[in-house]
Amino acid sequence: MAQHETDYLIIGAGAVGLAFADTLIDEDPDCHITFVDKHAKPGGHWNDAYSFVALHQPSAFYGVNSMEFPSEQIDTHGSNAGFYALASGQEVSAYFEKVMNMRLLPTGRVDYHRLAEFTGKQGDIATVKSVLSGEETQIKIRRKLVDATFYQTSVPSTHTPSFEVVGGADRTIPGELPNLWKRSDDLPEHYVILGAGKTAMDTGTWLLNAGVDPSNISWVRPRESWLINRADVQPGEDFFEGLVGSQIAHLKAAATANDGAEMMRMLGEQGHYLRIDPDVEPEMFHFAVISESEVEQLRRIKNVIRNGRVQKIEPGRLHFDGSSVDVPKDSLFIDCTARAVPFSVSEGRQKPLFEDGLITLQPLHVPLVTFSAALTAFLETNFPDDAARNALAIPGPLTDTPASFPLSFATNMMNRGNWSQNPQIAAWLTKSRLDATGPTMAKMAASGDTRLAILGEFAGAAVGATKNLTKLAAKAKKIHENT
Ligand SMILES: Cc1cc2nc3c(=O)[nH]c(=O)nc-3n(C[C@H](O)[C@H](O)[C@H](O)COP(=O)(O)OP(=O)(O)OC[C@H]3O[C@@H](n4cnc5c(N)ncnc54)[C@H](O)[C@@H]3O)c2cc1C
Image (tube, rainbow, N blue to C red; front, side):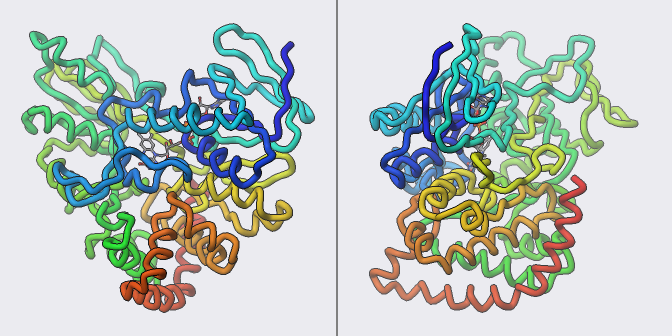
């Protein structure tokens, strides 16, 4: 059996593992890193994405700290006009390949076992199995195992649907839609989108942009969702007051609301959160980011089916728990039900980031997963022990609903507060491209930009919110722990 040695063995060469390694390799110039990943290329689930997927947040603060995306300019056309560009899925995949091949591997301090599965560890010896040959390799871990698989990403092309497909119902996945031109003499007369998340929204937008009449689309939306207004999450000086202003609005809502649902309703009324159907109370919030013009577009789809989760599809009929709905016989069912990342505690329970010999990469600022991974590498290399690191790294829960949202918001605030008090972290943040505010504030401070005055208002709002936010977060925690 082949044998290797390494300081850090990272399971997963997706966005999170790469962001961690990218910072670690600079902060600890002596360390050796080994990646093991089942995929054939770096980038994790981005390798399996549908062709019209894009980041829903600006590329400018996604990825790894050391490398920019080719497109970080402001878009001048389309539904993202006026905002910083969103890399396409293909661009994200190419970016992560570049991070591995042009940044990490050339250091000579990184090994990459592709098409290989981590199967376990005994003492300090990990076993890695080749996906194709089954051959096993042992890797001696000199320092730590790094688990970069916490998010257990699930996308349409790789997930197993939780509903039955019977009678030859025409089920497809979003990635197949661009191939419809190949069956132009046998096109479906109707399209049924299954799912309420961002993939379903992308699919609705794609169908409408492709010219499908909205009356020929039905949309199974078990829950309505609150969506982050993309205007609120723009980097750079010109958007700074808007971004901080949105956080102030959150704090003011948190200071008076009775629960998370009310907090989000207040923020929704102010335009910080959007929803497709203004008449339906959202019961879901998965941190998806959208522009007002995309929402306007999606509102054109009027056939919305709200009978819960689909249990079974057959030609011309959808079955739900206790009900069924007829749709045109020749419908194409588009499966957008993969859950992306786990929003329930039963699927992904938080644990300390730093344990003896193990780092489990989790959100430190929800939902900024690559920023969180990079900061974790900084904590690993610059703080003396796991107790000191964990004190600065409270794992942020991926909450599922408006009711549980105050828990992730309060955790973000707590971590941010702690980091701002720590001179080492505060200095690192000013240089981190993955932090939407750090470098901007440093630049504005250097030029004496008076727009920084809004930070005084932020500090006041934070003090005013503390008492009630603590209560909201406690309520939200109980709800979150039952999901
Ligand atoms: C469609 C979509 C769009 C998103 N857009 C954004 C966005 O705009 N902004 C944002 O911040 N987040 C976004 N996210 C959420 C999240 O940031 C990304 O999904 C991110 O790429 C997740 O990276 P990851 O490394 O955690 O997971 P993955 O991409 O799933 O990578 C994990 C890797 O681990 C490997 N692996 C797992 N188990 C093993 C094992 N036992 N042995 C070997 N290898 C293993 C897998 O093969 C995989 O390659 C999006 C998510 C989805 C699904």
